[in-house]
Length: 353
Image (cartoon, rainbow, N blue to C red):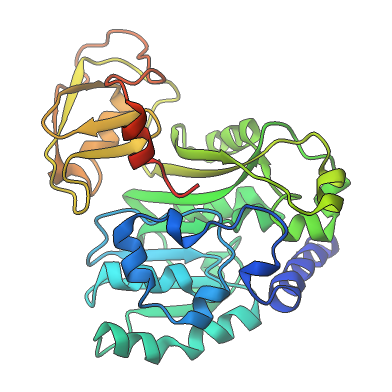
């Protein structure tokens, strides 16, 4: 680790370990309020200790379905709010690994392990918290292809080496495993001077990724298709921060990707998918991303990549996918929803941010 990287990590540790005491200390709208979560997750959140909830600094709700019995890695877990939500979802046979580099945050998370296990009725803890860097998960013993799902909530922007973070994510994911994360992105590159501003970095703005650079980064490490689940603009309430940030447009986005051998373009093989309506809390429709809303029982043409996301992952039992790749029909228009979304459906199926 070079001196500049070390200095940036120290600044982040200081901001989240000493300057911020609760989410009320944040100066932007990036932190996502609990009422934005799906109803069933809000119920689980009520069972999380108040002190843990107060130390939450996320910008979304990257909690996917179908987690029972799975191994989930929470990158930048902080005081453990999302980890304790996940603990309830994976159940006593699953496990959750929270990773963070900030000692003060981890002290809060570890202090409340026994309290939560008693509240959840687990005889043996199914969650553990590790101190380490998300850029080097091997150093804390997380093995290749050992994790079913990776989540992260407004943390990756804080890393000075984002390519290392995503490389590690796809190293530890099992084949067909899922990455679901919320973070801050921009419509243009952040000027170099602002990437070193401690307050802007701490508020998740200085390290925000330009969305096209993010696409290129994933391509370099072999992830050729990612999906935007939701996106919303970030408001900067602090006048000084707003002045320094200038005309940069910041967005809180939730992104989904899988460890699959996808193509770099949506290709048409004549495949069709039906949603069975069997994913818990999604009886009538399921949104894979912001332009694939599957309605129960209604056939939808899908590209080859989407077909794999539905048939070669843990989502497979909940979809019927017909067709293979024996005949190619050219590129597939994946940007236009095959089933029109009425406004009420868009509101119901939006992610947290």
